Structure formats: C-alpha cells, structure tokens
Amino acid sequence: MAELACRADHGALLSGIDTLYHLAARVHIMDDPAADPLTAFREVNTAGTLNLAHQAAAAGVRRFVFVSSIKVNGEATEPGHPFHHDDPPAPQDPYGISKREGEDGLREIAAATGMEVVIVRPPLVYGPGVKANFAAMMRAVQRGLPLPLGAVTHNRRSLVALDNLVDLLITCIDHPAAANQTFLVSDGEDLSTAGLLRRLGQAMGKPARLLPAPPSLLQLGATMVGKRDMAQRLLGNLQVDIDHTRQTLDWTPPISVDEGLRRAAAGLTAR
Image (cartoon, rainbow, N blue to C red):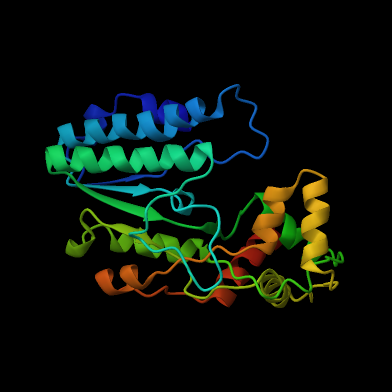
C-alpha cells in the first residue's frame, strides 16, 4: 500500500492543500525477502517520497512534513552522547539509507521550489496497537514470563509515545520556526531495558519478572545464534537530544512515559 501511494499521481488531490504529512514507507523488515533490499527501500522511501514531493510543490502545497527515522543518524550511541539534529548522518541499513536519501532529495526540492520541508526523526514509537518487539515485551510481562534482563540497567534508550509524536506533528503544521528544519523527538526521559520492563509492569498491574543475567553473557549468546541486532536493541544505547526541538518550537512532550505506557498497555488489554 505504501508503494502504491508513493507511486500514484496525486496532483488533483493535492490542489488547495496547505500542509501535507508523509508517513507512508516501506518499513524496516527483520528477515527481508527482497533480493535487493536497498533497491526495494529506495523505490518507496526515496523515489516515492520525492515523486509525491514534486507533485506537492507543483500543486502549491506550502509545507511538506516528512516522518523520517532516527536510523538516519545511526543505530547506536555512546553512553552520555546522544544523537543531535545536526549530527552527520550515518545510516547503517537499507531502511536508514533510503530515508536519508529521501531527506536529501526533499531539501533539494525545497531549495528549488520554495515549498517548506519539515523533517521529523522519531526513535521507536509505542502506543495502542504497537507491534513487533515492543508488543512481544508487553505480552511477556502480561503473561508473567521470566525475562533475563534484570541486570540491563546501565543502557539508555529514547522512545516516543504515539501521543507525543502526534502532538509534535500538529505543532509543525503552522509553527513559523519549523520551516526547513530537522527535529528529533522523544518522551524526554530515557530508560534502561530493565527500567522499561519494570515501568511496563507497573502500567499493566503485573510486576515484571526479571532475572539478573550478565549482559555480557546475553550478548555472547545472542551473537552465537545470529541475533546480534536484537541484542543491540535490548542491551545497547540509543539516545536522542531533543533540546533543539524544545527550544525552536517551544515544545514539551505533553504526556509522560508512564502515561504513554499505560495507554499502550490499555490497547494491548483491549485486543
């Protein structure tokens, strides 16, 4: 669906539109079946995005808001050294590369046409209906399964609740300072993996059962079974600095991590 949406001719539909949000994408896939993943990602996330942006500019759209990804910055940060909005891009996988190339093309279109472009790079987004690894963690806590992550207390990861991301995107509709800017977004509180699981347990009313396995042993075991990337997401750091977003837009995440987790947990319970 994302591919079809990006390829289509939307010229007539865009007439009279002031602000366009572009979220459609070929998303990150754990076991990608494509013979050439980078080409497949570029077809949608780069070429499709720029096709839509060209049509938007021709139709007179004033502002194009592009939801990109923190993967444009990279896959991990050093402790105490979060990503910043103006860091040199360092994408590591085809998804991140395609998003970075989409950003670059949008800036060129903005310079050539005068259409304003706003780029937002979220980290992991959670909320009602969240899927993949975050949903798996929630179900494990809900079922009272023991998890060997109790000693993973020194890493820090930035997340963003869906409500906080939506609030920022709404702010970007007409804020004059948002034009042609790149914004990182998060909840403003970074958590360790053990801390996240404990807070999830509190949100669900089911204390997380955490076993204190040494992180080094977990890393070794994951590497041996070909799950090194998963281990990085559970054991490593990925932090973002949102000071530029706060100061430029006078923006503060409207809900706390605990409220975001509560809403995500309610969505899981309701299904």
